[in-house]
Length: 290
Image 1 (cartoon, helix red, strand yellow):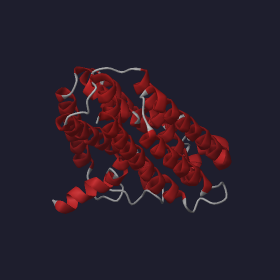
Image 2: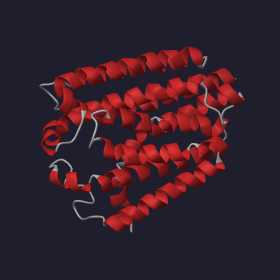
Image 3: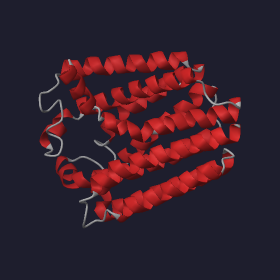
Image 4: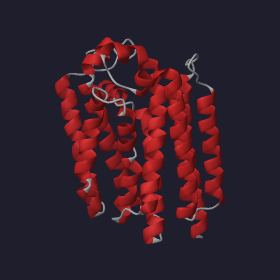
């Protein structure tokens, strides 16, 4: 059972939860302070955590199930659980159903708006895995899907979505799409051969890296807008500056002729960025509440 559990966690890349979860908490924090004028309760944070785990697990399970044929052909992904025979298709389907059940349960325990928005979230979670088959904008769809985490966190504790929530949503969308473009550069030859769509396939690695940089400039602008719209202070500014340095370094260590540090740019840098921005936002809000 332990071995099977570890295999499921490896399948959904559990460690990549660090990308979206801190921003889900950040959305809950900012929304609760802005609308309710208090920090969210521990119960609300717990339900947001469960909703995030359910949504992300379902999405990754679906992605691995839908992509199992192409994953088996790709040297980089042929060792994944399904093509390697470590998990049966029936087991993965059961896992997806269980994950969606967790998501629906958690949403039902939060603000009613969360439950009402679930159909949109489910459609986007399912749609993303198919987009690479018909559009090079698949990275943007991924960004818009993953960024439902902070937007959902906001709506979950407030029952509302305002302009600040939308700016947070778009900011994280551009951030996710930008580093997913960088990540996709390593598969450009395989994707082109298989007839799959991506920005690196469409515009080449050099063009893709420029687009990723433009997306991350939009992310930087979004963080500034949040500073003023959410009335944040110096602690948030400090975190924002660190995030800018991380984004700069991320683009500095990859180039069209050298993708050797792509994994560092993708996982290490972006994982640190999400934790830093959330932590400094939390400190800022706690300090202001005193």
